[in-house]
Image (cartoon, rainbow, N blue to C red; front, side, top):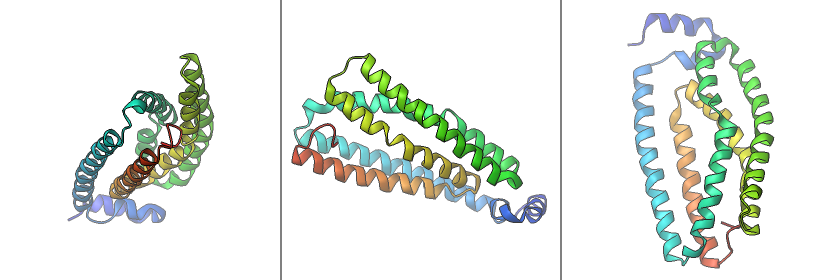
Length: 194
């Protein structure tokens, strides 16, 4: 059974009662299973992606692709910068202020995205990579805008103990990426398409 104190707090906060009411133990178990299954599924799909690239004669582009992914990881780190965990904690701590906190989070992402885009672009030029690597990196860095939105939804999912939605969407996006990458490799579309 659920703790009466949690139910009382949930009853006081009508807008966020879905966060606190219900069988929390079941939600934690469901989230744990979703995390485990989802992360294993994503890892298997990524391994399949690497195998597909190797079979498709993609070895010559592997180093360039790795550089682009490495620089984009820096951009993702700058866009997040620990804010997902901090805002999740604050939304759970003050559920009555969830809407205000989420607006602040969105505003911070609107500031962080251009900074991350600039850092990624400067890094690619500073290291004097080939033109195709720079172009692919800058095009890839534009995806940081959507990643910023994903981080906002990640806070919502985590604060409502519905992590399976986050993991499920990541798994589906990984599968789509594997299919599109396989297509791009087989068609010889190059680094920018991949």
